Length: 283
Image (cartoon, rainbow, N blue to C red; front, side, top):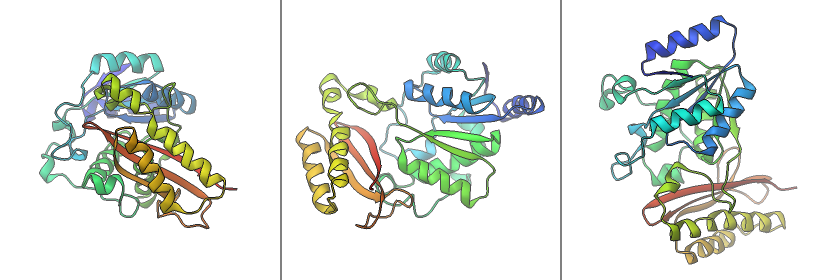
């Protein structure tokens, strides 16, 4: 595996792979990698001939009171995980390389509609930062495909709309969430949890599954379902940021006639914010 830190080196390596007729896949990350990231890289290797991963802790997607400064930077360990998963090229740029004119003079990409509400409401400007850095990475690498985890369901919807609206010639794949044995979605921020918090965290997934079962059984009182779900999560000691039932393709509030639904949740355990979702199709 090659590691490069500049756009010039990145494009030279990509050109060599293209010259050999290889199909290229991109897996963008912020580092501090776990088994979920490794699964994305492995899947990318099944879909393409040359796998590029990026590690960049993007300051544009962090709010002023969020964990940008303390977000774990674990490059050496991440390189080992990527090598084991079959990555061919790692792009690990500096902030100055990504934003040479500074963040305040950076062109910002904003995706309307799907970026509004939920994480978009709780973290103002977050999805503008995500859309901007993903747009830059896709333009830098120009891959045939890019892979993202479905845990960040709203983010995936934002990226799909970005690519569609800007006519970018890249295929976007959403891959299933990788979970611990007790159901907790793997996340780089899980490491912030102490033992007691870690034991409580799976209540989010258990609640989503319970609500999904009730929806499959025919319940259409979404407000009551949400109230019940919030109570269950809060009784376990978490503070609910949001819990919503949306139409899975548009992320608009669910209606009784909708068949493709997604239940999305975010909750705080102490200062750690966890997200999860459950998509389902009603027969």
